[in-house]
Length: 72
Image 1 (cartoon, rainbow, N blue to C red):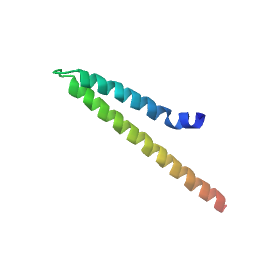
Image 2: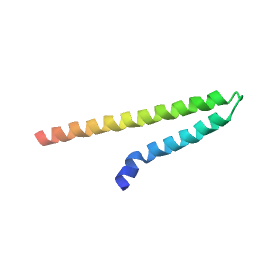
Image 3: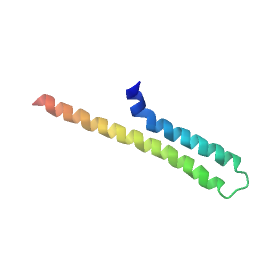
């Protein structure tokens, strides 16, 4: 469980943050700030995508390193 928390805790916190900002954007009728909040929600989604891309990249680097060590 600790490993899952360490792997996905940051993603979960960004999802919660984006959900709260999304609710705020939904409640801001006729406000010029509404679209800024919507943009923040999209940036949260982009942040999650970048986190998963970095995780995948690091995992591939570790696999390549393990293959090199096993050849020696």
